[in-house]
Structures are given as C-alpha cells and as structure tokens.
Length: 90
Image 1: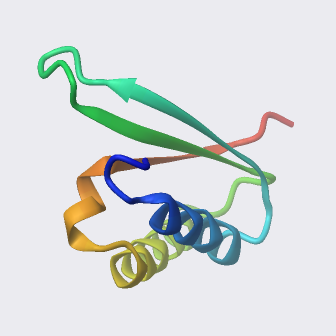
Image 2: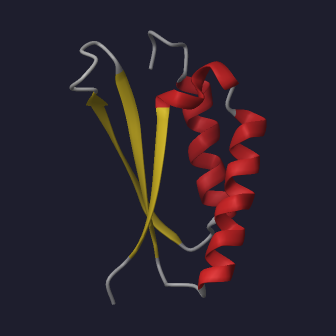
C-alpha cells in the first residue's frame, strides 16, 4: 500500500464497511498477486456480517457502500481494492 500511497484510502475503505454494515463481525484483508501480471497486486477485503438480510436490503446496502467508497477512495486506487461480503454461519 505504501508503494501506491494508499494507506489513507484503505482506512477510509474499512470505515465505509463498518459504517454501511454496522453488524460486521470482522474484516480480513489479504494481498494477492495477479498470476497473469506478476508485480501487480490487489488487496482483498472480506467483510463477515452477523446476519443475512433480505436480498433487496443487501443490494441496497452494497450500493450505498459502493457510492461511499467512490467518494473516499481516489479513482487511481479503485482497482487496488477488491471487496467481498459474507454472512457468518449461524
């Protein structure tokens, strides 16, 4: 992240996850190298949510999240981050 000067954007991204999904249990991150383009990395953020929501509520929350992220993460860094949302197993 330092190479891309993305530390602040990463903090903003995690804050967006926590604010948009207040029932988030945890957020894990992993740096992955693109096998087809060595030297190219992405930061994969997996957000684990406490409970499943109805599909329309989940889609609305994900749209809100995407809009918020677009507001706080500079466009030049948008391809650096990949986000996945999971529901905790009950």
